[in-house]
Image (tube, rainbow, N blue to C red):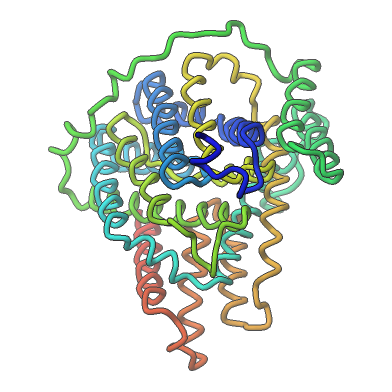
Length: 434
């Protein structure tokens, strides 16, 4: 039944391969279970409730992705936009976190309507193939930079802005060890190289004391009561200009973070057909459900995770991968102490390897066509330098239609791209004002 529903044979995969892929994706993004409560906790939210909300909505949206859209893409609350929620909206604007959740809820409804009427799908399909390649390559550089930073290999430097970190630290040495091991396994085409690298790195961390063994195996799942349904109660406080800005920002960031991540993961797995993602509407619906449901459970907006590429890299080709990933998120709610071994040093090598793989898409960009090359270059460079996928996309989408117009090739640009360019100009203005 499983074989027939997911058409495993035609996709050259097996239940075992999909299981390993689902587990690999989960391990690569499990950090969000702990990072998200920490970030939203700064806004005064109950960390235990946020932990449960994060795991539940990740499971629900990811399993929906697998069963309905049948793609190996995982969804969970996104990094970056959760910081905007906590530090910009709640702490910066001085609004209550319940009201901020209400803004996410409203954004989620708009998100859902755009998906129902297939507007999101049309927009994604209007993006030129070269820019899609740039998005994928840029995300590759971005997540590799995250891995290098989280692992301590690079760090802030007051003289050069950024430079090498302290490589004498055991934690940094563990990251370097993990990178070399994972690179070696991948170079020798070892099946499941990324996952095996994660396991070896974790074991090495336990041996040298950089990864702490869990003190217990099973723990009680924290209650959702402190956050559940608070978005509805917060609706009464919406209406100010500040909250309108918050709603628009949540919508734009979630829209293009998801679009960028989906395109990147789809290109990495070879799922694009004639520059389009088949059944894109169903994949986008999974994310819409995640955003809307997450606000009701009590967490910031969800997004498709580029870490899905780790599962794809070890052979995940169908929605069964996502089903397994979602199941692991559910299990993690009861066995959360076991996740203490999944530190940033353990996941960093996986992010860097996937970054290398995704950078391969840059080869398909027409670098001889300057308008496209300039837009692609700014997209790629903008993501790691701005520490934001959305900002990188914004730079490229503003420059591309402008250069096409000034070179007399404006008619070759899809009208939607002009609209997106204007939207991103407004977005950048709002971002600077905020």
